[in-house]
Image 1 (cartoon, rainbow, N blue to C red):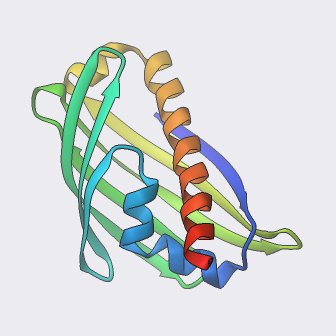
Image 2 (image 1 turned 90 degrees about the vertical axis):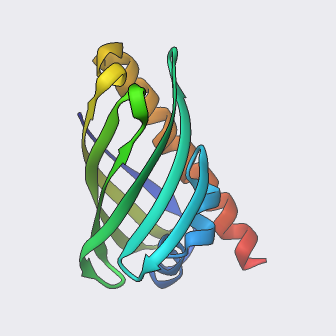
Length: 149
């Protein structure tokens, strides 16, 4: 599965970069995230509980940041295992561009799933992924703005 998109964030690029690297803001922004722990500046451990169609799963995994060009871009990649529900692995290239309205965050995601999740059909997986991405960015902007207050 591949997906791309962009989201306008009403803040300067340096502040958005800091928030994208803040485990507290990320945990509050990721739908279903119950735990997010920084191992070091480039590695995180996460637990995410999701329901996709009829399949509910708790994914545990690790995330790595690479190809870091601060405060412009990075690649985030990882793998999560959800027991009998299956697995998800992949990554995203994330870029931040300053503009008159703040910062434009662009992303390109590549992901693979297996197990029961893979049997759900690409249309359900794609629509759910788009909803989760949209929810992440809505949450991210809210949590970012709350931190600024």
